[in-house]
Length: 142
Figure 1 (cartoon, rainbow, N blue to C red):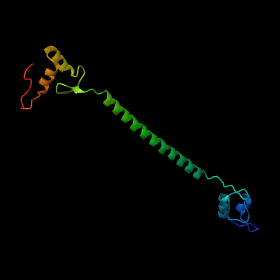
Figure 2: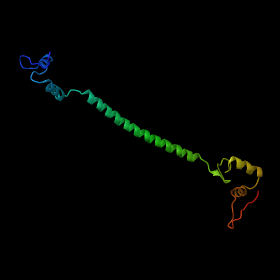
Figure 3: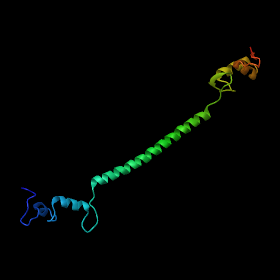
Figure 4: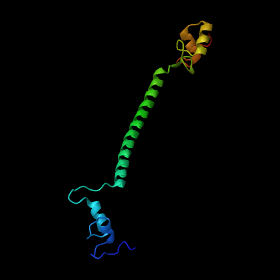
């Protein structure tokens, strides 16, 4: 059966069988349906457009949360670096790259200084091989 066949009144069979306006073609009825309901000013809801609108809202929320995550991560890294710098001790005074743990010396140099029993400043001058203005080493032995 041809759905676009005309009835005896000149209107589409499909239009009259589905309750549509008898003066409109199927394309015109679709356009009328999408332009709004006659007399109400309301438009028919478009699920595709609603999904796009929801997706756009989610993308804006994602962008906002991403920015917050990056800012929080930067703050945590900054706080961690700051904490590391605060807790790091000074290097050993006896010309050693190890951190000082006792009396300004690393554990090894502290034990050596205590076992020798000499003056602290003399021990530091000896370990650093400090020289005078003439280029001579100040402390050659302990």
